[in-house]
Amino acid sequence: MDLSVVDRSATLGTSTLHRVVPHAKLIATALLLAAVMVSANLLVVAAITTLLCATVVGLRLRWRPLLTLALYPGIFGALYAFAGGLGLLTAALIITKAVTSALVVLILMFTTPYPQVFAPLQRFLPAVIGDALLMTYRSLFLLLEKFSHTLTAARLRAGVVGVSPVRSAATITRTLGGVLLYSIDLSQRTHDIMHLRGYDGRLVITPLSSQSPASDRFVVTVAAALAVTAAGWRIWWPVLNPFAWLPLAVGVLILAATLLSRLPRRA
Amino acid sequence: MSHIHIPDGVLPLWLVALGWVLALGWTTVAVRFASAEDLRRRVPLIGAMAALMLVGMSSEIIPIAYHINLTVLAGILLGPWLSVVTALVVNVMLGLVGHGGATVIGLNTLVIAVEMTTGWLLFRTLTAVLGRRRCGLAAGVSTVVALALSTTLLVLIVAVGGSPAAARESGAFDPATLSFENPFSQGIATNVLLTAEEGPEPAALSVKRFATVVYALGSIGWVLEALITALIVGFVARVRPGLVFEGAPAQPSRAPLGDEGVHH
Image (cartoon, rainbow over all chains, first blue to last red; front, top):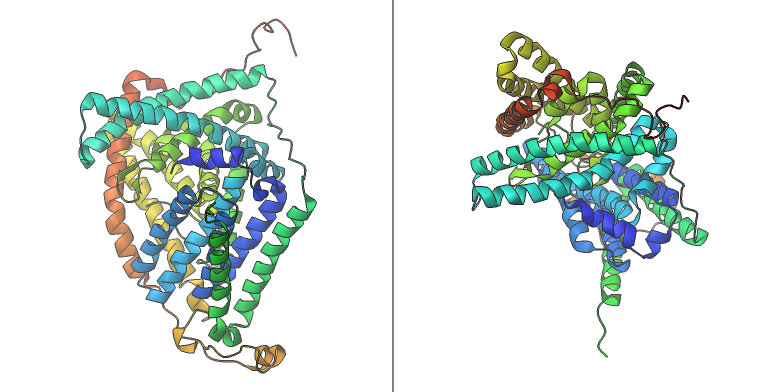
C-alpha cells in the first residue's frame, strides 16, 4: 500500500472531479457502493467497473497505482469465494464486487484531500473519533517514512539479500520496535504542539465551497442513475437478466471511446 | 487473517447493520468510560498507534497478503477502552483505501476490538502469573489466543451470514439465459410485470470448508504475529518498561510554555 500516491493525487490533482465539492462526491460514493451492493449479476457489476475505469482514464487520474490498490481486495475476495466452495460464477461476482467497491472508494480518495473527506464525517462521529482519524492520517506518513528508512538501514547493516522469511521477519521486528518508540515520542510532541496551539477537544476543518454547482449535480445524478438501474435490475432480474450483456456492452463502448480520445495524437 | 476481507454486498444487510450498531455502541461506551480530559490528551497517541498498526498491515512478511496487524501490541499499550476507539479508526482508514469493504467496517471493528481487548486482558493476567521477565512469552501466548478467538468470531460471522447475496435471491448471472433479441420487443411494462422465471440454482457456502482454509492459513499467521509481538514487547520492556507494564502514558496536562503562572 503506497498511500503517499493517494495523498499526492488528491492534493495536487486538477481534474474536473477534484473541483467537485466533497459532500457531493461522498453522496455519489455512497450511491455507487449501494449499486454494487444490491447487484447480484456479474455483468451488471462489470458494467459499473468499466464505467469507473472510463472515469479514471477520462480524468487522467494515476491509473496504475489506483488499479493496483483496487485489485488488492480481489485477492481476499477470491480467498473467501474459493474457501467457501462457491461456484465459479459466484466467485467471479464476489471478486468483481470487491474490486469495484474498492475502485469507487479509491476514486474518492484520489480526488479529495483527506481532511475534506473526514470533515463531513466529523458531524456524525464523536469528536475524539474525528480527531483521531486526522491524527492517524498525519502520523501514518511520518511513520511510513521512518519505517522505510529504518528498514533500509537495517537491511544494509544486516546484509539481508533475497527473500528469506525468517531473516525478513527478524529485520521487520527490530525495525517495528524502533518505530514503535518513535511513534510514542511523536505522539508526545504532537500533543505539546496541539496544546500550544490551543487544542480544546476538536480539530475544526472548514469544508470547501462549491466551484461548479453544475458539476456537483452531474456527479450525483450519474451516481443516482446507476444506483436506480442496479436496484431495478435486482427487482426485475427474471426479465432483465437475459439482456445483462447490454449494460456491459455500453460500458465497454464508453471505455473504448474514452481510451481512444486519450490517445496521443500525431502532429 | 483476523479481520474480514469480505467485499460489500456479500453479507446480508441485517448482519452488516447489526455490526455497525454493536461497534458504535461499544465505542460510545468506551468513550464514556475514558474521561474527556484523558481522551483529549491521548488523541495523538491513538493516532500514532492506529498509524503503527497500518504500517504493520502495509508491510507484507510473506508475499502475498500475509501481513502483521500489531493489534495485541496496541491493545497492551492502549488498554481496553482506547483499543475500541483505535479499532474503529483503523478500520475506517482501511475502508478508505479499499482494504476491506466500507460497509463491513462495523463487523471488522468488533473483530479487531475483541482481539485487542482479549490480548490486553491475557497479557495482564499472564505477566502477573509468569512475572515481568517472561513478558515476551506472555505477549506471544496472548497473541495466539486473541487471534484464534477473533478468527473464530470471523468464522461465526460468515456462518451466520450464510450464502452470499448472489445465491440467496437467485438474481445471479446465468449464461444459459442470455438473449441477444430486442429486449423491448414486447414493451417494457408487459415484460417486467408479467414475466416470472425461475433463476439458477443457488451456490451454497460451505462453512466447514471455509473454516478449514481460514484456520489452516490463519494459524501460520498467528505464529508469525505472536513471534513478532513477543520480540517487540521483549525489546520495549528492556528499553522502556513503563510502556509495557503500565501502558503508554497520557500526556501531562500542563500550561503552554511561558503560560505556567497563568490560571485559566
